[in-house]
Length: 209
Length: 376
Ligand code: SF4
Ligand code: SF4
Image (cartoon, rainbow over all chains, first blue to last red; front, side):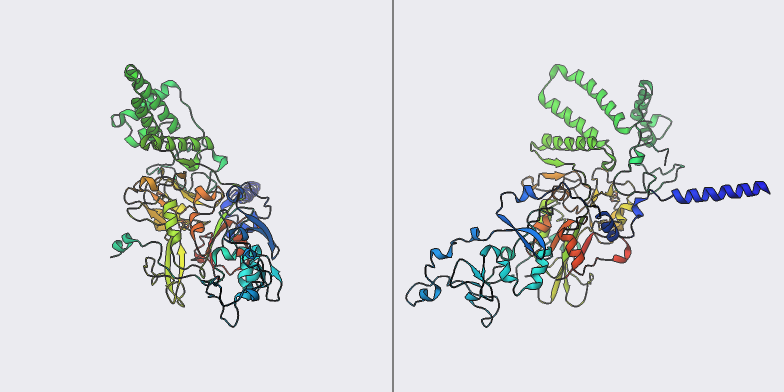
């Protein structure tokens, strides 16, 4: 009887030991899902060596903090061909609007909101042509033109600050550099045209016949 | 498999040992398992001579040819290195009186080919071995074409897990990503291979891949349609990796599912196992015009492939590990593609996952793709 008890105890202990040691090193199934894995493994995130600096070096970028998120965007003024506007617009707009001089910017057609909602001076400041203007008449720096867009396009603005709308520049790593609204959208005609796709696969056509 | 000290992977078709799905007991499908570093067994001179004879005269010996070559009780690479070395010494002695540079070049070529032929699985290599094979491949390319390429063997960085998000409401079906991908990754121009497919789907019908068209040619976006892209989703629990009989494909620590083109035997099991049509096979010799070759390469990425091997999207490992966005992300004119580090709580990809309604394809399969879709 004693020996039976002994064997029984021994097996029991062995079983426990096996249960405790098996699967312990099986890192593969440590997490139930990749979402759990991301959550767990990013708790002690201390940053990485990979950086965007080599890629964005030399670009004219500046830092903005929007929606409590800080990132870099490209400057705008240095990319406008004839900035400052006051080089031509020496007088306020009203004084320059005469019949007998050649009209400037005649080729710009507004294809944005309808004429009831907006015209040139909805966004441009007719008193200070170097700046933009908010709906309530405050000056907006041309470099920060996103402030103008965000007045109406709040949802896009919020997505842009988070990174769901728009595009990163060059690198996924930090420091984050993102394009600003006017890098993709022409503010006078912000929609995208239809176009032909970049390629057509003739082999696929043959294969599927 | 504890008695398996070989550094390569064999099928052990007739062996008594039971084959487990992984070369080491820990069951990891990605990376190496450090606790099971195979021991290298060096041989005495006599034993080596025996082995070398074994390996060279094949059928005349008692074992069958396969066993003779592969069951030499030593590290296969060092065995063949020794063999090559002795062969070259012999050849060198004969050729030394008529030494010409071209012959030393062809000798070098032969040596490279020989060593490449018998190198181990990249997955199990240490850093030195990795850079050695990369150096050989670069040198070999130089000897063959007279041109220089840049090839990296950069490993995954700690605290990085790559992830991808795709905005269905932004994609307009322009296919600029497809073109950029083909050029970046040196994909076969003859068979017009493309890792990315853009599916044109009818509005209001959900994801209906049976009725979708991935090879449209009309102005886009077409009225009443939406577009979505598919490619390899770099599953965190990749079924393609499980089925590979030779472990030529695996998940790296940063989440990239990669293929060692030199270890792949072309059985296409992985292609059948992938629920997302993420893999592409080279039915013919892939060809890229010399002037179009992207010379910035990675061993696990866009280096030149050969006929009969599997390949797929690697999230442009040659770019992403350097810090750059994949080519498709960079090429997309609508910003529908978002890429980044899932482990960085402040990354844009994390913002998307936390603030948008994201979903993945065939989530119920448990493959855990690291590729999310979302809408504005
Ligand atoms: S999408 Fe397919 S090829 Fe890519 S990791 Fe998943 S199963 Fe493998
Ligand atoms: S085709 Fe290559 S990578 Fe795929 S399962 Fe076969 S050997 Fe493995």
